[in-house]
Amino acid sequence: MARRRLPPLNSLRAFEAAARHLSFEKAGDEIAVTASAVGQQIKTLEGWLGRPLFMRLPAKGVALTPLGQRYAVAVTEILNRLDEATAQALKPENPHVITVSAMPSLASNWLIPRLGAFREREPEIDVRVSVSMKLTDFAREDVDIAIRFGRGHYPGLRTELLMEEHFFAVCSTALLNDPARPLREPEDLRHHTLIHEIADVPDYTTWDRWFSAIGVTGVDTSRGPRYSHTYLCLQAAAAGQGVALATSALIGDHLTAGRLVRPFPHQVRGAYQYYIVCPDDAADRPAIAAFRGWLQDEARAQNV
Image 1 (cartoon, rainbow, N blue to C red):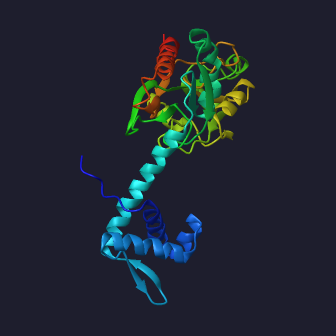
Image 2 (tube, one colour; image 1 turned 135 degrees about the horizontal axis):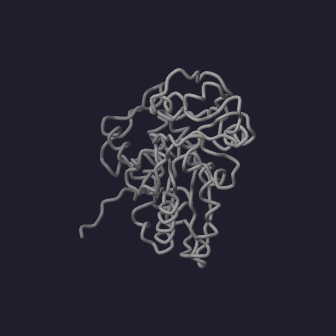
Image 3 (tube, rainbow, N blue to C red; image 1 turned 30 degrees about the vertical axis):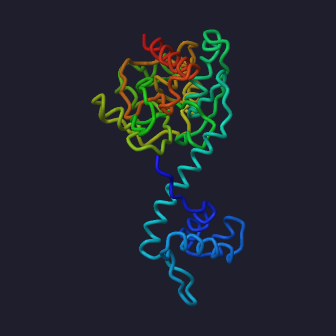
């Protein structure tokens, strides 16, 4: 193998910071050295390359030369990859501990109630749950596997469909048995309060989309209270305050416990589904593979 021609790392670091800021002083603040020290490191790098990277502009600071612009893009990418690799190397490794990230609603309504079954199946594996609405950055976060709500496009990650999401109407038993306002068909909802979830997600299944999908018209969907989370909508429905849209993934035990009932069988498939995602090079690690397999078994059992 030919010997690598690598410039001094400190010089690269100073150059990359100065290129981003177009300022030796700001670069020095970032890497905790003086502006003159940054200038000296860049001079060293330019000497090593034998070509200028910056143009010194009197009273206007500095500007990158065409070569400096190209070199800055490459160096930034390399340093970012080095940072990610270092973060991975610093992550503690315990073959019997896995950290899973999930949305708060899925964690509380679907995942956590089932974890006792996983503990019985794999008593040697400890599971830590981290809740987040953001996509996991596996290179920087101490997360081994994530359950994500989306369309399944997660480049560079092992991605498996966990379960589809379907939306259906739910209400309290008392509301269902109201003799003055019977709930026999979706059209009957025009006589009831609709409970809405505030979801800042494109194409999310709202009451408008739900009625349109099942071919029902004439129901005023502009009325009714609005809540920011699914569990709040379900709580309001269980308290008899109206009819909510529930999802197959987030209904929890509300139906089996009798707190909520489905007044009619109509359901609509959502635009987004739930996926298991993790780095491909870690997917077959025994603990992660066991957890992935268990998640799939639980999802299949739910749909039986």
